[in-house]
Amino acid sequence: MSNTYVPPKVWKWQQESGGRFASINRPIAGATHEKELPRGKHPLQLYSLGTPNGVKITIMLEELRALGIKQAAYDAHLIQIMEGDQFSSGFVAINPNSKIPALLDTSVEPPIRVFESGSILLYLAEKFDALLPHDVAKRTETLNWLFWQMGSAPILGGGFGHFYAYAPEKYEYPINRYTMEAKRQLDVLDRQLAEHTYVAGEEYTIADIAIWPWYGALVLGHVYDAAEFLDARSYKNLVRWAEMIAQRPAVISGRQINLT
Image (cartoon, rainbow, N blue to C red; front, side, top):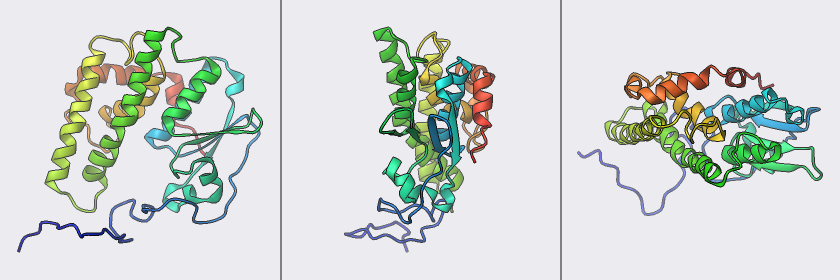
C-alpha cells in the first residue's frame, strides 16, 4: 500500500496535527480572548519573546541606547506564544497577524503601532536617524538586505527549522529540500561578506541587526542545533561576521533582555 498523501478536494482543519507548535497554529485570525496588554513608563512598549525575530528588536533598542539616544528607552513585556498570549484582544489590536514582536510608540498621540520585525527596525532607524545610511545607494543596499532577510528567513525557520528540529517525525524529502535552500542562503551571505565587512557594505546597519539573529546565530550553533549538519564552519566569511557581531555589547545585552 502506498503512503503517498492524496490531498482532499477541500482541506479541513485537523486541530491535533502534531509538532511543537500544533497547539497554537490555526487557519483563522483574530482574538481568542479578552485581555489588555501591560504598559510601562517608557515611550516605547515592546511585546515580544526571545526568538530570532524578537531578538532583532531588543538588539536594535540596545544599539540605540548605546548611541546615547535616551528617547529609545523602552519596556519589554513577555508574550508567551506557547500559551496563546498573541491571540489576546490587546495584542491583536497592535498586531492583527498575532506574531511577535510588536511595538507601541506612546511618545506620540495617538500612539503608533508597529508590527513585523523589519518594519519595526525601519521605523526605529528612521525615528532616531540611526543605523540606516543617508546616502541613497547605501540606504537602498541596506534595505535590499533587510527585505532579503524578511523574505528568506521563513524558508529557514518555517521550512528547514520546522522539519529538521520541530516536526513530530523526520522526513527525508522536506529536510533535503529545505537544507538545500538554507545552504544556498548561507552561500549568498558568505559571498557578500567576502567583499564587505558588514552585510550591506562597510557600515553596521539594520541589515546586520535583522540577519544576525537568524543566520549569525545559526552558524554559531545557537539555532536548531544545526551548525554541524549544515557544515556551517565552511562559510568562513559568514562565520567571521557572525563572531564579530556576537561580540558587540548591544548584541550581548539584546540577547539577554529579560522580557517580563
